[in-house]
Image: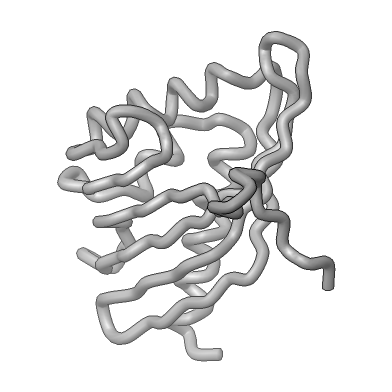
Length: 142
């Protein structure tokens, strides 16, 4: 593993850590001001760090306590000052209404390093499901 690879993996881990503890300022430090973000909730696309921040605050506010965010099947490529990654996340926790949530989401991030710092410039979140049954997809156990 190269130094660039290790730095990029640490960047991705820091993003997950910020989500888990719902630290909005630390999370947003991972995003470019001109981020373009696709999500599974309306309006489905968010442009700029202000809109993305509001979307993350909405997500954080759904939970009573921390958010579990387990990363699986991470694949990434780093080439100079550009990197991308795709992965699965198991999103878990207790919602404010008292129910427990466990759902799989796919995430793809495109990043650029500027001034020695990685920033996410594009992110796409989707929810895998079986189109015939409309049931959520669950990855096979390893």
